Length: 331
Image (cartoon, rainbow, N blue to C red; front, side):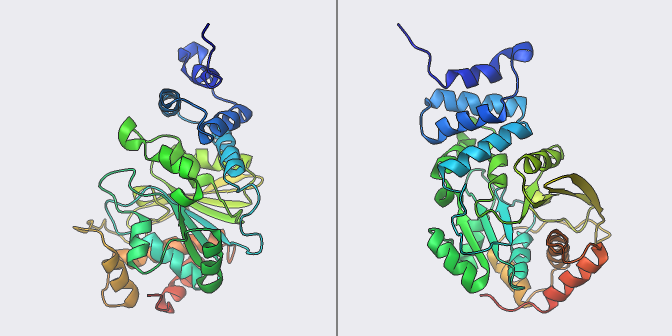
């Protein structure tokens, strides 16, 4: 007598067709993701579950349940660095393919003001992109191999990067199924919402407009104190200075949008190649890049607002511009 696999119920819930299928509740999502993280599902079930979610499109309650499961399984339910207050959680999971990763310079600029920035991300899941981990390594910033090293880096320089492979090997495996399944999965979304150090402020990026409100709704369910989602270049948390965009805010009680006008009048052509060397040249002042500097300043200004250093956009831009002019070598 064949006995149904315990995970089959979650695949069935998602896959019963237009009339029979439904969203998972937060509790169901927690239970399903917990089984996936504990390797208690068959490979066929994992692929089917992720692609059914992808087809249906994940909802906020499902994302919150998934994050609950990861936090419990990987030890984020309790702050892994209880003696260290992290000011800003910065997720970077998209990778860049058009413009340089100017947001990395913005994050370092914020850390130079004494705000502790913890960045996390994954690499290699989508071909044709450059990833933060590789760029930071080329810039001389070594990814943290464990929480002790992350704490040391944050204490010494107020900046640390940790790869998803270190944070959650199980999620890293799932996100890299992108090249096998042919599509991104909801794992690409939930990783942006992890906030493993329980920072009071979080920033993440999206590419598709519909994902901004989804991130806001999930942040509300997760009771994230203050979060910012940027529909940024390539899906990273980086404001494009040559086009208008919206910033999407959420705190424990409400969410809203803020128009963010462009800083540059004309669209700027993307460079022929992306490299850490060009980021370094601009930081050191060896090369002038109008687009790059505007991207850094505009993105940093949004972080100034996120940190509540001011509530006025123009003043935030002035503060960010001053920080840029006063930047110090970090290489």
